[in-house]
Amino acid sequence: MSERISREELVKIYNIEITFFDELVEYGLLSVQTENEIRYLTYEDLPAFERFANWHYDLEINLPGLEVIHDMLRKMDDLKQKNRELMQKLSAISDKYEEG
Image 1 (cartoon, rainbow, N blue to C red):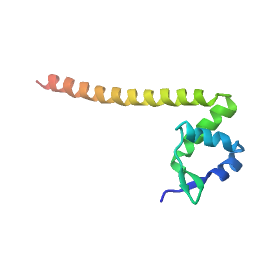
Image 2: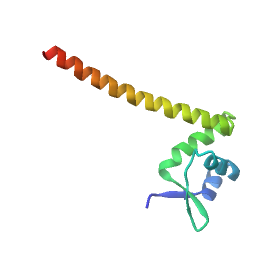
Image 3: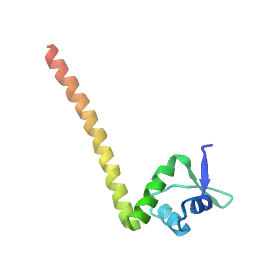
């Protein structure tokens, strides 16, 4: 089982509203594990939670804005990966023609 932290602990540590955490889950920005009616966030998802909390509390970005930013960043990462793959294929083709 992966390391995790309860919703209640996160609220205390990060001094956030519990409703903010619940809304992140409702918007699909965080996925949680539930055990004995206690919601947990895995340590693996903690950086995303911290990013959302910083954007929301420091930059005053609302939940729909967080959702849009998150989606755009995910799409940018996908495009970067596809670009890397295409560059590798292009490089392989280029090398093949240089040899021949």
